Length: 338
Image (cartoon, rainbow, N blue to C red; front, side):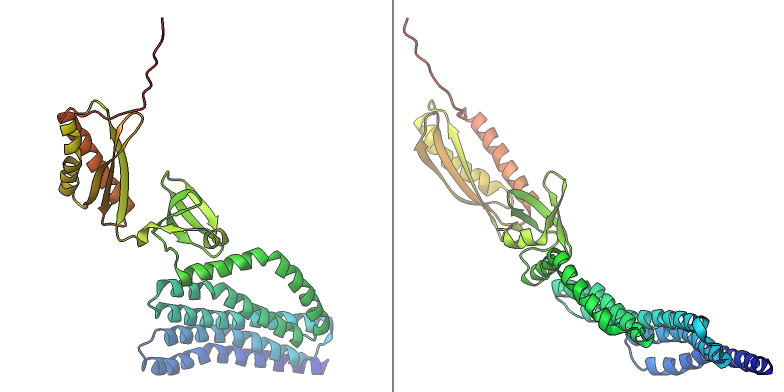
């Protein structure tokens, strides 16, 4: 019994000294690290130093408890349980520290890259890095606790096969995401057309891409469907070529018909952001005299192009009304014998 009390006093003294050291050492370390980090302009080392100081204090308390408890020489299931819990808590602090350091380095690396798509790709690796660090930490903890790893590895191998089958599609979508970021068939904010859908790209995600259609509804499309489909990217257009067919009635006179191409050319030339190409009388159709109008809008902006097209169409209507030229529409004449 005397030995127990003796060990208890030593244990308490050990724990107390350890706690005092855990409280004092971060302050001393903070001054030392501040001198080192002040010599650099980078904020990353300041962040890592602050993390290290915040991690040392709780680790010091846990280590003091483990040493103090070991002095008591109690042993048994209680000893193993408390030591195991203490080591697990220590693992959490250590892994969290390493994880945050890696994530900070990844973010700093990504911020230095001018290419936005590659920068986003690097940032997307953060969850994988975090999961890897935690996995390594847990395996190290199990080995340290004396767990037979042969059975664990066999279980992980079997689980890995099942996980591989289950995660086949998510992993494929992730690599399609990497393909989109590197190949750049489109980027956020651009207007595209795919599989009959006209939409603006709002966000490119790890598994899917969010689009906003011209009708306003949100469309979520898998990355694999986007990479395997035929995409028309209108943001890459330096200018839009617009082709229109319009018809006038057969009652239109020769002089009026002859003047229409010049009339339309003047309208297009007067329209801002429009470049006239040609206008020709092309066909005697069933119900109309058909003209083909071609002009360019030097912009990749869909709304600007539609506004210019609308202005031209309205001016053509106004000019035709003033010149008594009527648009044609399908008609059919029926002759009946009495």
